[in-house]
Image (tube, rainbow, N blue to C red):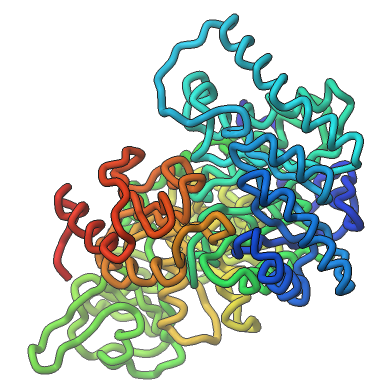
Length: 628
């Protein structure tokens, strides 16, 4: 896909992409309808009352559509009992059957619930990780086989008025797709379109798309490619947004906000699900916070410019010069604001990731530690750790070691070493650029609420390779909204290769700001400072306590910087869904676990009580373990 191929209505003004309306029971998705929030139960589907009670908790929390797994015919049949009990209690919210591997279960469920979700990667294929070369004739034969397997469900959905989500997952692409398109966003799109073309041929259009991945960059690119393809081919199906296996806690929220929010910013998305390894009700407030940001159209006036240097379908970092340790191929830098303190002490650096041991008279710097401290008109009169530098206002700046000036429009008091220059989109004309001191780094501020788009335009405006640090103020927001909205504004730009650092300001303490800043860099994979956990949110297929196990694994491995560990409840979310994990911990039966190195099973059917110890031993065996 060419870089200038459109994937949304506008790169410069908020405008929701117009899709067709699809009825899911009494909820309409798409068109001008509000963005819909949904989630999924984690109970055993055969536990009728347990599933009903959890569904009610979800609905009462604000969930508008409830998804329930149906891994076999018996679970699909029991959806009727769940639906009937919910109706008896006065709950008429639509139900969705989640299907993997079992077309016969899908065909049963389509006559009971309002929507069926199928995964095109495993609906008619078994994942064997085989390397095959298909001729065009053989490939067409495979498509005909898929058609025969899929057509009965299409006809039932058409007869019953049942909607369908064709939900591609990055890690569960079929061998056929993998061997023709690779493990790519393009492969994800084509996987969905193979099934969609069959629906269209049968005049069935009650379709909703999703393109989920645990890596927000892959997820965002796949949705953009999908919409670009729909625009080219005259399709207008609604979009269900989500980052799969986002994880738990702060990491899961940041990763979800980066992926979902970046697309919402460009007007894409009609329904969302935030996937957290927590109780499903915990997903709803996060989803509501994301959706609330887009309840009304934004009217910010952002100028339209040529976007030839924007690469929406691939990651290509903006080229910038290296000034000190900023720019070029250096990792993005983090700035923490200490300007409310007149005099900085060693203790003030603790929340920024730098720890001073009085007894040893020694500094220790964490992997997630701020690179620069902005002190405004304050001062530092002690020796700093070697990994941190200080920025002062230019009118009080002195040539102290590790201290640099922050300039606005007065360039008279400058450093020969490094200068930070505060600016916004409106400043970036040729006169301003030519007047910049040598060794400058821009501190780019957003002036509108549509900050991600405004700053994106600023990057596209710049014709020089000067490094740019992005600055945002969130002083009016509580912690949850600050975390989510900063993840959108910074994360969406980092995903697209923009920015050499971030400066997040808020009323909250510096520990929160530092953690959030490094969490955003981790989620966008632009700076890895800790272990990454790709953990599924659990469902009725899950074969162990995911929350407890994830916490246990995190406690013992969270010092392994840069390692990616997949924690999956069952084989459906197994080697495929943890596509780029280094190690995998996967439920393979009741009370037993299989361990993976990459996509390969290396230890099978380990008793669950021993499995975490075995995982640690496996990591040691491959020389990826370091002691705390």
